[in-house]
Image (tube, rainbow over all chains, first blue to last red; front, side):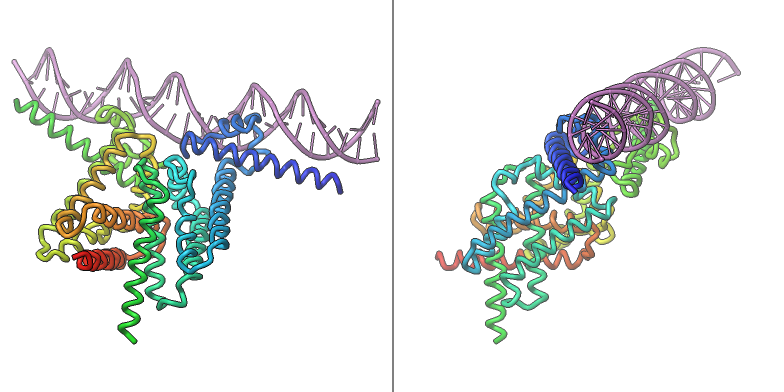
Length: 204
Length: 204
DNA sequence: TAAATTATTGTATGTGCGTTCAGTTTTTTG
DNA sequence: CAAAAAACTGAACGCACATACAATAATTTA
């Protein structure tokens, strides 16, 4: 009994350590430079350990991406919980997608690399889908009841792709600042929503 | 004299063939699967030929990306030349960024891979910058005189990143259609520009 | 403490890659 | 046609990598 408990604990620990080491290597050397040797070295372990705790390198990468996504989604969730007004919630959603200290070229590039790898690996596509669905549902929680469904989907797509595009630009080193990006997306959101409101008023 | 002329011709021909072969391999196997062997095989030549006409694999890749960018930019240019009205020009610019038959997952993924590789390779960053600058200048040719400079830059960034984001989504296989994307970006452009106009009217 | 299980190591192995280069064929020159 | 230059070949090399695995160390169990 205690045996199993301990085993699980150390296994989880090692897996976590390897994932975090993989993350650091990823940040520093990019997807191409993320070798098993470097990961194990970064984790302070020997080369063979990776095969012991993971199915292979791909498995580590996937676990890493999943962990990152989870962290980001939780950040948005806590931001949402703190917001009180409808517009505050919108800002929280958008700002949550440009976390200060994380909106940096190397991190953006890591994310981009994973997107690029998505075409090969079905699991990544699924992960991305989940991520986008969450954004969509967050936006829906703010505006679905105010907008017609078709137009809402359009606006959600517009805002979502803008966020992605800004990250992409950041990945190439463009000098974008997280607060500016939030402001930009927010301003577009405002323009689209006021327009939609006016259209709805005219219809009535 | 004839010697030099002929030499130049066959060299250009082979280089072009290799670039196009590289492009096909890229499309089919992705950036990771684009090996020198496959490229030469696809071009119907032997393995060593690549080093004969190019400095190395990277050189071929770069030439390929440059060629693609040129083609896309020219497509936009011709579309622009045909447009007569101001709004027609705007639509031509946007539609030119979603060319029918080219707005497909594998092509999108190829572009995405290059973006991801940009962080390592300075030449790609330069290429991307040129591309974005061209988009910016095209948009400027339509709207700069109507808008304040700061707001124009914001709007141009918003539209540009949306276009990128839509390509990114397409890369992961999302079912987006080129005409829908054009319509979406155009609708956002309209919303932003009418808003900007109203703001300017109120100021007067 | 002895046995047994688990955790870790580091070398070995095989694979796939980009690049090189000595040689061969083709084309051009005189 | 002979000599020279250019175009091209394909085997060979070295390197970096992921993974496997036998050996060893640490820990738990009885």
